[in-house]
Figure 1 (tube, rainbow, N blue to C red):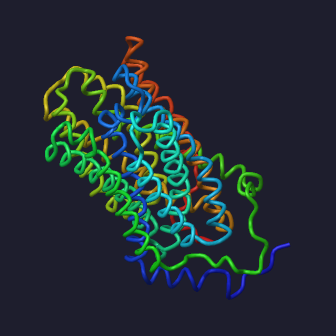
Figure 2: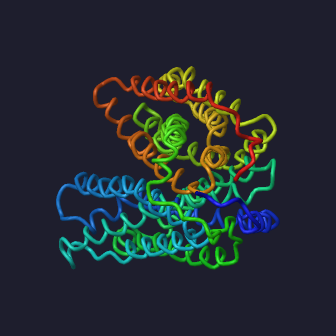
Figure 3: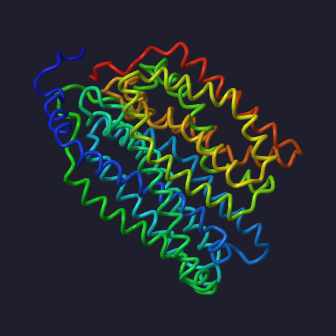
Length: 431
């Protein structure tokens, strides 16, 4: 039987956290940026280091092996979301976020120090796998703790605005990774880059994580975990709040398939359909920068008009527009056309990304908020988001690339139905 809320129910801590809002945003954002920097620097540098780490042979097979390792890390995210989210509910958001950023730095350092196959044999790819497992585990947990920390740090009426910085920092991490990879490619010879230069990208990730660790030490805890109440069990969120857990999944399906398709796979889709590589990558960089800049704007709008209208507009736009948009990209190879289509898609996509953290936090009770968000969200992302590039390529191999648009539209329709029946949460008091 639970005790009545008292002076130690976390309100005082949350008030102090809200008074230090900008510092709380920086503390949350630095870790999220490191996570996604590490995630994307791996994909950018894979064609370079694959030949060093895996057995000599077919270069394509080496790259596929490296991406298989990437996928393994992706599917460890739900476990990280459950276990680290549970830790955040039991021992506090700040303590858990300190642990996750430490794991990020360790994961980057492990990959940067991975020996070559020539010097260590089969041990080399084993070390790489371990580094990716650490990264996958920490990124699942980072989202769970980060979401609760950000939203609980927000003053009343500004949760959407604070929530938006989750994807601002995600985009920043992507852009920094892209910039580092580009600088390394231009500053070093091919021999230097493939020999030792690729390691610099991962060492930079470890250094940024160290800086983030220092910043997070000065953050303010947002929830009192010394309340004298029974602390939550590992599966309590799922067992006691199954409806809310399913809601997180339903809300996330459209967002994750749209996000990974539009921000990660779209440049590849454009190249597969006749657009020059340089053009597709340049447009991707421009649109990502634009995407990061508009997050706080759409997040603040949701604080005024609510989450539900933003989500409905986002999902409806992708249900109706994704198929003709991809068809236009396939038939029109001009720079301006691809840029406009990409930017318009980013505007609608921000209707989900800027508020997803706030909405998830508003759906799940505070006692189990981190674990209640972490597991269903990360599981949904792994199933539908992580497989988006694979599904797009698979439809292309089948000779029907247009089916990918219908696949996205179908998944977005599922979430649209959820949004239509969703109760507005923007003005709900957090417990």
